[in-house]
Length: 135
Ligand SMILES: [Zn+2]
Ligand SMILES: [Zn+2]
Image 1 (cartoon, rainbow, N blue to C red):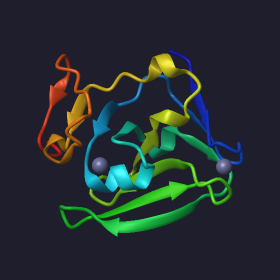
Image 2 (cartoon, rainbow, N blue to C red):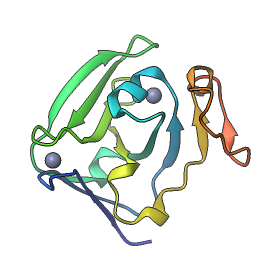
Image 3 (cartoon, rainbow, N blue to C red):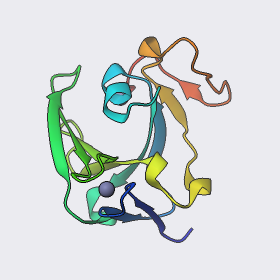
Image 4 (cartoon, rainbow, N blue to C red):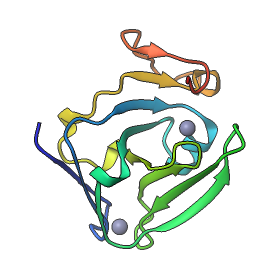
């Protein structure tokens, strides 16, 4: 599949990524819910070197439940969450699926942190589910 593209609400930050991510997941943890303002966050995992990011982002770092540092990057103009990095997975970048234009490329393979999901959130029984982050 050819490259896919995404941008924040105002267009100041743009990403270009391979059409096939290493993995894709819906995360229902409380940090992802707060950071996105959505009831869960869908993320595509890539090697940082394979993703092109144009435009300046602001970042906010916080400790994860594993004691590593998560850094969330967002557009300083419109506030859109664009990507995240995990200190536990150096060299990896997590692109926010909601910013992508090629929506067919968004195919989450797992639901993680189901233990903290909002009860009304529909869960696809066809994909793997985990109470926490596996691996
Ligand atoms: Zn923006
Ligand atoms: Zn999360």
